[in-house]
Length: 74
Image 1 (tube, rainbow, N blue to C red):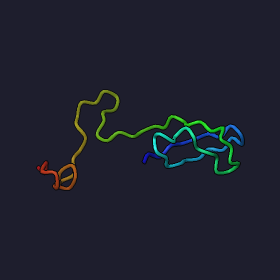
Image 2: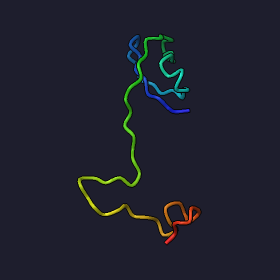
Image 3: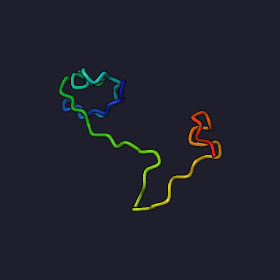
Image 4: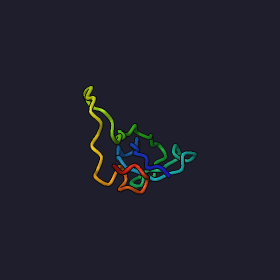
């Protein structure tokens, strides 16, 4: 289940909750128990992405991308 970040409109607390996608909009605030909560958009870190137009690939550890268990070892 994914981790979501929330903002409570009742007490303005920010909190995180692990919830199923179907129940993600029904989370109560753990501080004041209000149902007036909203999910916030979270920043997701990418792995191996390019930054500022760089064309060089990301460095791969000596055992491959996952230590060699996937068969991509150099």
